Structure formats: C-alpha cells, structure tokens
Picture 1: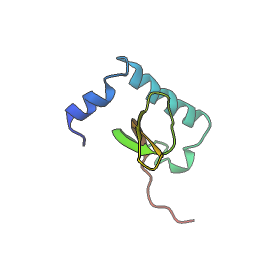
Picture 2: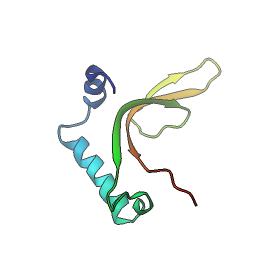
Picture 3: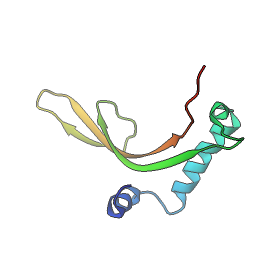
Length: 93
C-alpha cells in the first residue's frame, strides 16, 4: 500500500471527485462491453484499484507528462497513473 503523502501528491492535480468518476466510468464500460465476464466468481467481479504509480518511457501518453532529455538526444517522459487490477481465480482451459 502506498504512503498517503505519495497518494496525495499524485492526486493533487486531479479535481476532487474526478478520480472516482474516471474509475467508475472505466469499470462501467468494461462491464457493459462484457470484457470481464470470464473472470466472474459466483456472478461477481473481484477488482482491486491501485495507485498512483510512476511511469517513465519514450512514449508520451499525455501532453502533461514531464520530459527529460538524455545526452544522446532521447526524450524520456514521466507520469503518474492509477492501475485497476482484476483478480481472478486460477482456471484451466
């Protein structure tokens, strides 16, 4: 579990109430499009929401990401995100 200061820092730029609507909207779309039915347990979904998490790489996923420039000319983008994890029992095919 992340430290509360880390969570507060990551969520600071997001308006109050927006995080919940983003998460619930995403989950509703997944359920509506039946992307999660295979992992239902007794007709229920087991989902864990985890965040924030730090990400860095050479792909800019959002305009707001921090940029650092390496001596070799490569641009590295850094950001913070939230991860939703679907917990599923082990299944055999």
